[in-house]
Length: 181
Image (tube, rainbow, N blue to C red; front, side, top):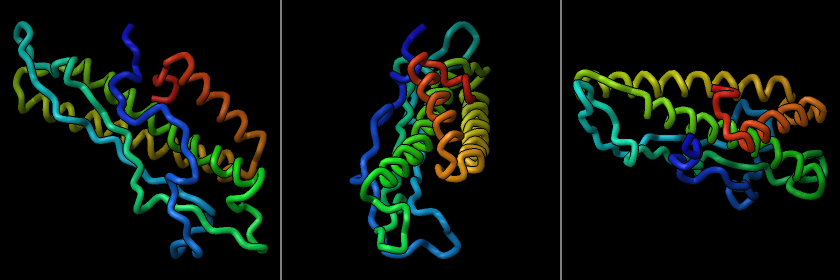
């Protein structure tokens, strides 16, 4: 089997605080001290005909995992903020945000894999299937991200965070995005 991550541009990689804008106040209604926003849009694909089917040329499959710099932020810490960008708490917070990013990377890899499997009787049918596959992966990713935050209490439950870290790390090391998607 080919490397499932080869079709994902921009991942895997380690985040750093330079990926985050520093803010002095949280956005309205937000209680976290950092937030990462991303998208994984499919690239421009070439379609080919194989037998009676139209499919995406495997050599043209590409999904970019992009951090939305304008919506990715960290709260500038002060004395009354226990989770700041300094010390071990900062490392824990960055690791939690890395988990979000890695779950998105696994989603992008799963989406690329799904695109490789798509077949259609025509370009329009294939485009519809491609759009449906993207929506399905997006929905699963959103639900998974919410579950990740809920179970780890946004990274504050250290035992739960470590369980998620191990599970995510295993899925990456074993090149198994299907662990989640």
